[in-house]
Picture 1 (cartoon, rainbow, N blue to C red):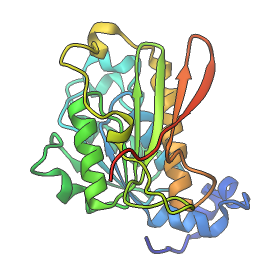
Picture 2 (cartoon, helix red, strand yellow; picture 1 turned 45 degrees about the vertical axis):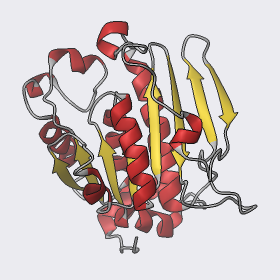
Picture 3 (tube, rainbow, N blue to C red; picture 1 turned 180 degrees about the vertical axis):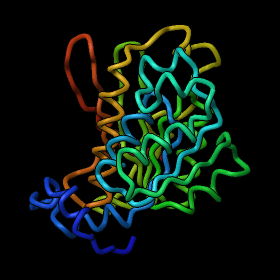
Length: 253
């Protein structure tokens, strides 16, 4: 990522970032120069896209092959009723343009697959996974590791969710290799073991909590601020209103 100068309107727009010593003008320039790919413009992807666009990320790529449906609107807040039947990449791009005209959106109106994932990932500095199925999560994690791109991955259940950051191609301060997604979840659950959102249900606001946490981790990674959730799985229980953290380590190699 190369730093990019801010014009006067951007300085005014991002003033609350720029006055933060941890971000400042240099951090805001890093945000403007950043290229972030979002997998899925759904429940998790909606708040990620909104907050990264508002934060001034210069280029947002969106991978999604779905169209907006009425049942999406309970949680996928980047889309509106008028967007029903519209491709989600188009609806999200229009919403981002309204929110921040300084952000470039690159739509990838397709399903992430083994034959296209690496070529897409290599166009970006950071990937955020907001997908809703295990096949895509494992593909995203394996591809990000191969492409040496940081991955912020999140998941939700009915009332709970989780977030972690993956950089398995790097080592920690002690020289130990960072863990991978497969160190945390070695194998996917058997088909049907975890009911889909359409079957089990999900509280719409929960996806906002987890998606916003993902956006926060992305901003930290881009600006070099704070301690990202590398080797830590952050768990949120919406019914108990509690957070907990599980540490995990490299288990292979």
